[in-house]
Image 1 (cartoon, rainbow, N blue to C red):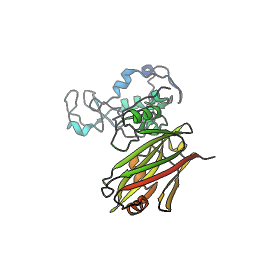
Image 2 (image 1 turned 30 degrees about the horizontal axis):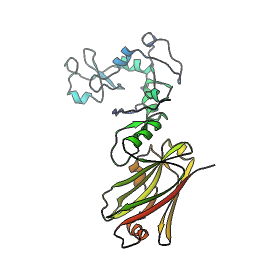
Image 3 (image 1 turned 60 degrees about the vertical axis):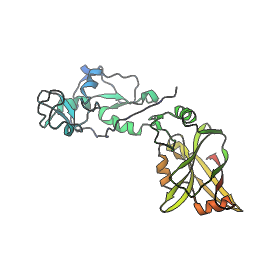
Image 4 (image 1 turned 90 degrees about the vertical axis):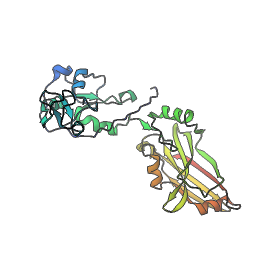
Length: 301
């Protein structure tokens, strides 16, 4: 399957279906569709348009409001129009469009991530909940140096990291990196390094950065898995840092990139090195950070 990018700026809320009897609208949507998942189902575009809010252009969920002329509006946008129908400008009142809610309850629609491989068909009121957990939903860019809005499948993100963020790419399950900074007393929550490793047919992101832990400046290194959490648990990794005859070792399970970089960092799920210890490992006059971080990745049996 070809790689794909995805940008979704919707903020729809997952809403449970209304407890009402479904209306048979097979004349609108064709033959009734058996329970999901089944591919290649097309719902009439006119039905989709009926369920689209004219203000936010998102799908409408109960309660669906209407004016006296029958124009509909989602509950989220009703307060924004100050009691006036956005279509005819008549007063809205508190009329609820139960008929359209029943039409929606009878529909079954494909997942919006079908281009990423999801072939499921879901009841209208269950679709949002499924999409919030769909295993085919796109991943956010794991680059931590900026709030990158790009999302896509793993092959797309790997190319994006390499081409757009100029991230170092390495093959193999062991690594040996040296981090050098001339003025280690400047800690501004700076992300210093992201390296991507390809091993076991998967991709892993190694992060190293400085940040404030309370009032104390610290350094942290951790690994993230480019895939879902269930698959990430099949792997383990170790990190080691040291100098002048001392060393620190961390062993853990890589976190999925479904968890944001900030979430992993703020949970301290990685090798944390206090600045004084880091400077001790660096040796010399302690005016320059020189840390060597080594590690390996392995697959659990």
